[in-house]
Amino acid sequence: MPRAVGSEAGNSGLAYWVGQRLRRGVEALGAEADYLYTRSRNASADERSAWLWRATFGTAIVIGEYLFLYRVLNRRDNPVALGVSWAMLFLLPRPTPRLVLLVARLLVFVTSTTALSSALNAVAEAIPGLRPWNDLIWFLGMAALMIWALSSLRVRRRPVATSQVVPSSPVAASVEIPHVRFRDVGGSSQAKREIDVVAGNRFRRGGHGVVRNGVLLYGPQGTGKNLLAEATAGEFRASFHHVRCPELVSMGIGSTAGEIRRVFDLAAQNRPVVLFLDEVDSVGSRKQPQGVGTDAGGGGREYNAVTTQLMQSIDRYRSLDGLLIMAAT
Image (cartoon, rainbow, N blue to C red; front, side):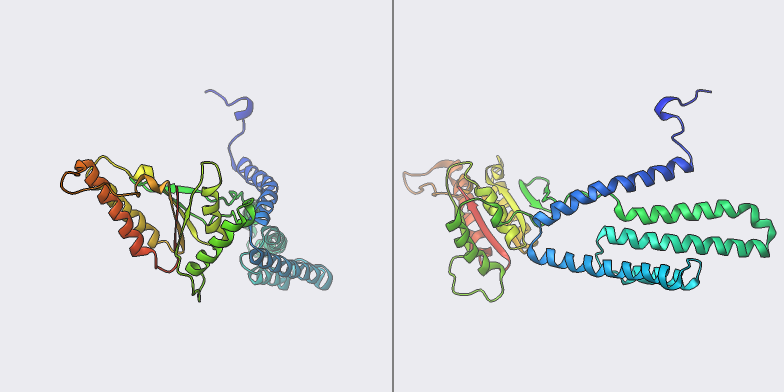
């Protein structure tokens, strides 16, 4: 029978499985530090304040628990210690900062393994036949508790604004609110001020006195129009729907107009949202002339139908609360 040799040797069994879980938990410390650094850069002032409060309150609970267990009780096999360690775990604020949660779970690990050992010894006194199994049962319980404690540091992906493309439609709808803000966009001070006024009327309650309810960005490629639109969504805590208008154009008669309707319907269902129509001039510009002697043909009529559908969709949704229409040329 062939044997596993080299790096594959011994990669099986309970000990290997437990070791892998412990190693991943330790490696997650570095990933957690990177995660916190990224969150601190992208979070708003309110998010930072909320996290600081949870971290401070949770740390105070853990320190108080430690002092009670090791200074007041001065023993870990007391049933009171077991109850206090579990009770403090449920008193931590949610969501609990992960390093605080790790320390709290490790305290539970210490009291629980000690209580398990005492319970097994008591059972062995009553049932001597179970004494040979004490060590195995205690080891399994200890391993399960350690894995549970270190699972609080399981690796998390960095929270970036990922995109999911809806099948058959060129709409990239961000799963999360973009983390980019106005402060991350260099220059464009006047544009940001004007967008803030218009977007504030769409997303903030009590907005009034602003007739404009859409934003048109124009300029050469590479001037930051897309970034500014994404920053608007992040600034007002809205999802970001990026529509590449040239990809809306289809060979089928009437299909382009249908795609435009579906794009607006999708955005309206995911409010608050910034609907960004990139290169809108590819589907919505001046209509082709029609009439006696000026018939633009089937292609021209289809183009006019697309332009009309775009105008109708904008008119239908432009006054909908929680939806801001932005476009770029």
